[in-house]
Image (cartoon, rainbow, N blue to C red; front, side, top):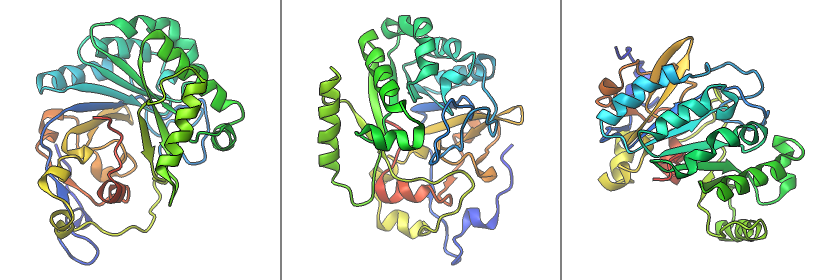
Length: 303
């Protein structure tokens, strides 16, 4: 059952009708494997870290029924995020089952938890469906990366990225986007880094602005219904993640469907446990992270 919503779900503080996205299809279903992580990053948008249990660890038994429902609904890909997915003890089995059904994308810091699991997942590089990994390399220089993730993290992540590529997995890189940056120059620096590491220079880079830590409320412009028609078209609205994806989390022992990978710190985005019903639920753009999608086209998706 979908819970009742606050007035803020429907209207901006100025009383204007709130901007919404109407879900169109289910191209991606994301699974949050839990907020346990081997690293303690100061900027972590999930507030994850060693032993952090803000969200519960997910198991194959939790996830499998939703994978099967998603297949029936025509899903094109399963995606996994955390925390660090490989900190979940049952994650290799979960990934193997998911990959037997659809292509998969895994977000990872590619450090010790991944290196310890490579032997158990190597066969998935040439399985029925493609399995790819997005590795976090926040900046093209080790010092800036390690400042938040810990000394040696950059080198370990680069080795993990190279190991995945050598095994035959598809790989991409998540990076931070600085305000007023020269994006083309940053891309050239990554290309040089990849070339030196024996990787393709043109690996996909997915850039993220500062999205803040969970349960923070930075001041951002409000998104009204007028904004969504004045500044966006039907085509651009269809590129919002909440138009084509959903995310599963486990909280307080229960599986829940959320409309986006970035809003699990707000109880109003917990839409219940019926994935098919949630596909008919409009999504209010009231979370402060929605503005990054609205203004910058930020997206966790690579589709």
